[in-house]
Length: 100
Length: 386
Image (spheres, each protein chain N blue to C red):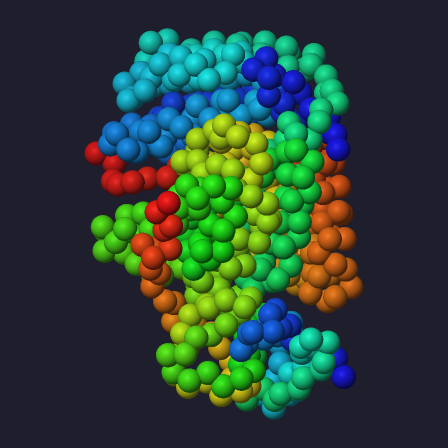
């Protein structure tokens, strides 16, 4: 058994594949030192993202423990998550400025 | 930590000893190329701007041109102008003299009477300057004299996993030793600006980081452009980066974790030491030129897709986290960080190795981009030429 994907933060709902993974192949990653296995439901190219817990339409996609966008469709476990099904979110800069 | 550098009369320290043949405008760029080809020890830069500019564009061009001449890697500058441009040679030379007391000479094609006569005179001046430069020796300098630039271009998902964290590790080591590290590309803060802003040394710097992102989005909005339509780039997407947030979260690793002490305008020279943020667009070539103009002596440039880019006056070290790219583009890549992804080395181990490589380059080792003589210049624009 060889780990072929990286979970960057325990909060993440996607992992990054470190090599090409074919449909039906195992996706293996470590979370808090424990090995997890899911099945790829489609072909995953190297360094692309795979969904590890279901993300409903408009829910946040999390990588690095941070929001990288929102799902534009329901994404089931094992799906490829890419620019075709994740949309960037507008920023609220005025809220972020501390005005001290 | 020490390196061997060239001490300048203005107090700064260079890691190269170039005589710069600097055009004021695109019209004198080709003449500069011929002058540099005649004088060993000199480099020319091709400039596409310098005339028919609105005030905002002129300010951007002048900051780059004066900054190039002031860059510590430059021994002295020969300015070559046409004569009818916005800022002619004598005026540009005067502006440069206000920020550095390094050797300078200037020539004007229309005044002297054509390119052949100008080349004749400028080659003589450049040859003498290069001869004077050749007498100068490297001396031991403390790392606090060094300002590195961190940059990324042609990113893929490995950039945020390996190359940028390793470069960030080097940045922290340089800053902890008293040196400076500059990060730029405001476009690639967007989506991660809240995390970057937390590193602001003061509440004002925190807000400045948020504001440069807000202002960039407003600026692009004024020409009906959403930065998200151009970012991530097609190559980024193919490399596994889906949104600007994802790209930015990976990008900001390259600047390390230390407090940000100053936010400077595009191509401006910082006044403080430590971590610096420069407000530049996400176009990497513009950022490379801007950070060289800001006084950085050397650049760590991360790339997942691979890029050959370089700049005549500042060594650029290519760092990749993509094993395939390192092998496939070995003629352009300087350093491989993919061992982080395979888990055979830690970020800190590779940080030590990259720091060692960086110091070798500071001491004179030539990078891949340098050995081919690559020199891509781009200057930011705020609107059309007049």
